[in-house]
Length: 343
Ligand code: SAH
Image 1 (cartoon, rainbow, N blue to C red):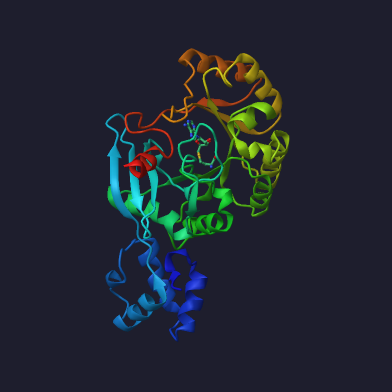
Image 2 (cartoon, rainbow, N blue to C red):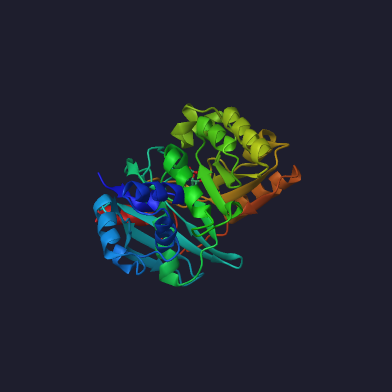
């Protein structure tokens, strides 16, 4: 079994090199080739002897994603990438350009087993977890492609990051590591469908990343109808876990709420939502549902979205309506990957 060298932190790399009879300082030479210069082969590591390169090749794999397709939005510069993993599986990632910097949305799994009713990524089920190296690579390839620094990362693509907990955590460590891309944890957001025990565990890691919770409904009954995971973790338990995350980390929670026409977009839904999260240090992000062909859900009309926002604001809740990026290029998560797999 060869090891994914890109999934090792500097300390682990040092240990591997020591075991090979190499000086540990070599790790400090190799690590930036992987995590700052983003080389695609060991050959490119010009200050490493050929003997050591051979040893590295024999004991490890260098994970590099292959860009299969990229769709560019003419409206706002959003770029949606389809990458092939070494085993032929596909993942998608999105670059969004904001005034505050370049933000990349990455996938954490190939497929997903959470089964949310409105989501395209759930359609084919889970194929496998991504390694930390494969998560990092999505950012590295995009940074190389555009020749600009990526400053923000959101884990909101295909997959449930907290269903791939250990790899996800390692990814955060490597991404924010001072010897790597060194992205501030405050510029990293992870979105979860609400796996309560892992939210509690994450809170104890005392990271500075933002937790976004996919709520999408204000009652247990409605949430269960949209998100099967809600059957396992009751809505109030999820809210309590978020409160705990805030208490442990001091990071304000983002509640994501995809508005589905005629399903969860009424005035009463807004009032119940306000009651549910009242008193929490949080922020609500409203997302008009992105219609997925296979799902049959529709967006509310734009006025209903504004009304929903206004209703929440009456209760003093911070609300934003997610600006839709890349409308002209297969908006919803998992759609590009799905379309490719259907071919
Ligand atoms: N598994 C994680 C992250 C992936 S999805 C999670 O559930 O949070 C990122 C966000 O997009 C989630 O809030 C998810 O519910 C939402 N989403 C998925 N499909 C969508 C669609 N068709 N329209 C609007 N939001 C969608």
